[in-house]
Length: 586
Ligand code: PEP
Ligand code: MG
Image 1: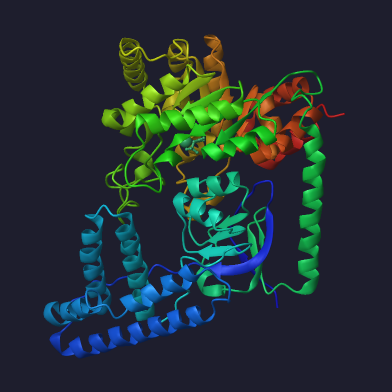
Image 2: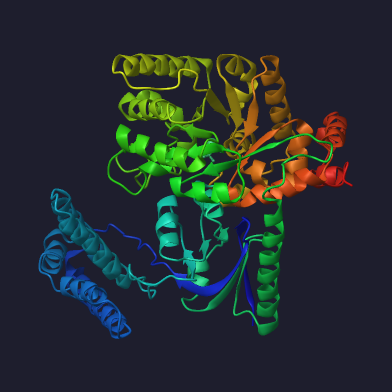
């Protein structure tokens, strides 16, 4: 019988996937417990049982390796098997249980920390791999200490076409799992506006987040239908349902090919108003998708992804080389580089103190030291990026965008730093564009309400609706339990957008939008009616949004929106959409 699990869908231009479930190993919960001395023999026996189960599991995996598989895969498993008998791991753990009277999970963790610290002090890349082996093996044993059978995932398992089911995924996980061929993601935690979700959407991977108990209810190997449009995951679907979704997959491919015909058509409304469509990039490699979908520039390059999955920050030369690569690929169309926005749900080891530990949730990172706040506190982190952005501006049209601004004082400090950096570069004879436009993200209500003063000091503004909605409606964007309150058409949000546009108009400062709202074709008419003429989005949405723009009459949308603003508080989101649905269409 078909089972349906509900979560929150993370749209994208390919919302549906059908594939075998692959459960990611659960992270074991490690109870840190001192035990009475009389329980020591029991705890030692638990450890032995877990070791035996882990060994059996690895032997089974080894036996299943198809003939013809590269030999190092079997060696990898052999190494793990050996480690299960390694005295540095196992004997030392037994000794800790005996001498310190602690439970097996904790003893293992303490021994793991000791070993990892030793490996960390070594520079040899091979030994670093061994450090990861220690982690994997310890995690395996800890999972087998649990009473529930684990869903273990060998790090080299082939994920091609699989639906990854996990308790939670970080943006770094998404990147790595995508590289390993995952076709869709289902997670128990996370909201649809978390950076993990945005990344999944921009990689066009159907994703459903907030599916409670997914790792308990789903089994590795069973066929799943993931529908990121409705936020549903179907297991054991019967043939009729599978046929229906296969049909939908085929017709969405057809729609994509119809949309491709718009590629060379102008992004202009029926009444002749041009709208600039730009792409958001998370990774430098996304630039290919931006070009392939006809972007007329990049409105947001999230450089923080350069800092993930590594031990230290990139230096100036690495920043510069990355930017130059993108500029070359853009071939003369503009690149907007957003300076580092680390913090929130994108902690990076060693760079975001207090955010990488398990207390991150209580530290309230959304209101903490993130983005420009972190950069101004740590000039050693910020200045190399500033220098690289300025130097890149000598090679092509570059704009610099500052995230999370909340006050004029921050803008003044950034302007001061930029001027100082320009002077240094001049002294060093390094070229840069003295007219490189400098802009701010308007993504905090305080910035929205002081937009006129911010606009007077800068060259452009970009509205970040993901955060603006989070802060205006007091909804943690990564918390699925409040995602039902995330409403882009809330009157407070629409008023703030109008306010920003009017405030910037006083100094004729251009305003674009780069939050997810800009790339959602359901809201295109609303945004055009409010007065936006520059929208930046993940590349997969560009043609969908262009399709809407080309069908509508912006003059009529502006009139309808104007009319609605007098009684916005009385209008449900559906009424707003309905009123605009056909305004001015042919
Ligand atoms: C936003 O907040 O709308 C935005 C575009 O920035 P990010 O999603 O990276 O926080
Ligand atoms: Mg933001």
